[in-house]
Length: 515
Image 1 (cartoon, helix red, strand yellow):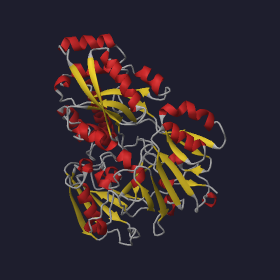
Image 2 (spheres, rainbow, N blue to C red):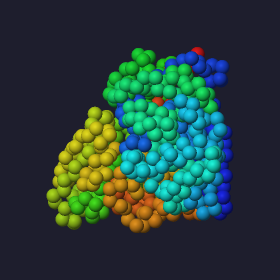
Image 3 (cartoon, one colour):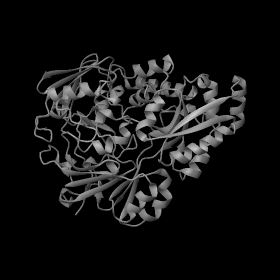
Image 4 (cartoon, helix red, strand yellow):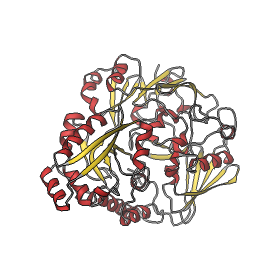
């Protein structure tokens, strides 16, 4: 995983022409069928369409990205490239960034995307009264219009990660006309992206049509884009097999079913590097869990290999720290810190005198394999005397309920373009970690954002934070999830989807269909 910036003793300017979406595997431009329809199956149906109201952008990104542009975009690599901002420059202290806007971007009603529009959107996005996702922009203290084409974003700390943070749909730029008119953005969309929604069927799908005024034709290779939410793994696979869809997100547990299919020449599958992982996200402030020895005991009680073999077809390798192998800051010395050892788990619990622990475990209702994993975890913890109450909740409520404290949540820990972002979002925001971690952990993560330190020191800080999270058992660590996409031989760009190489999202923006 690439560190997005090195030492910045003086202001640094980043400039580029925008992501082209072209790759070595992409067919020549003449082979792309510009009048085609690309149909993609996602695991969840569209819900709240307001990008600033997303409790988990990982759930909503696929439906929002075709309509809403941001200042920057993360493309395959992962690399941060320009989107609405054609360039940006850090201040000498790294606490503010000036973004210079494109001159050829408009919202879908023809309203220009100018500095005033960007300021209005970002101020809404960081306002907790208007945005559920405001926590992702917690470091931003002010957004200023310098002139019609320049926006200054000011942070409360050195913010080498700011361009990457602003690439998420939680920082989407919304048409100010819609904001001023109080349009209900939970059911309507008002962006400046490559596609315009033609049909919105919440709980099912969205059909998009190409926006003819868009500045980057490579982001809209197909005339029509259809993204369908199919939660049932078998139904999604059957739709792919029968030709109803062109590309689908493939769960780890589907690998065996997909193997005979992708052995045929007209189908293929691609697995991205593992960066996110399943975990039981704990509230370390819950009275029964405040002693780290209790949290370590819970980790020793989990048979990760058994869960992987029985439920995930061996595709989800056990993990023991938040920064995974191959990512900058992974600490090799941690090793298999929590091998399956229920006897050791019981000894630790006896040592603490913890004989009456109840874990309220929230799960996302109807989503596999989390449902099956939760049942297995419940049984394994019962073997060491820990009672688990399963609490299934809708996707929109699960993370928010966990953030209120007193509960745990079985869900993926998200990964971001930089390890600093991953650590900050997963462990320094109340939404995903209700009780603050140790001061030592906080200091290591905060210092890693300083653009004036070198890459080696930054890596050491990542490693230190990852080790603390493992040693103090901030999570009940389970296993690393590969992002896999299956597609037909007519689809191009599925193996280089932005976002896919650090989190379980495959951005369809640069995908297309050949003639």
